Image 1 (cartoon, one colour):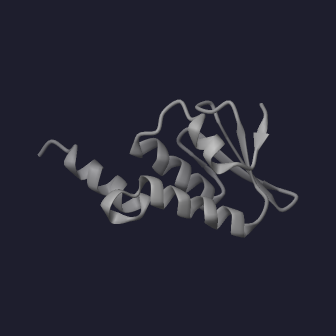
Image 2: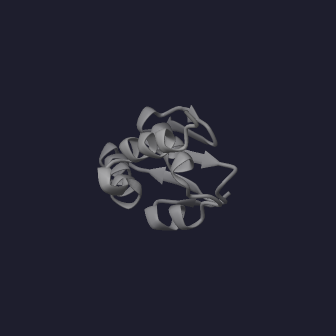
Length: 98
């Protein structure tokens, strides 16, 4: 599995990019753990995110790179809320059958 530090390359190669998947990615990276289809682990100061939904491994070389990636997710997938978590909760509540 090739490794990339390019945020856009990683996102472009996701097999799925609906908000549930993006939320799993966001939570995995921010918490440095396995969440849904993604697993993020720290090794020698770098974060590595892997998933069966992507042919690439994302490498984040610093906490600043992690924060920049999370900010990109918020900007690109946060909808009118400006953050992934808010948009995810909105979509989830709209999909509920009451």
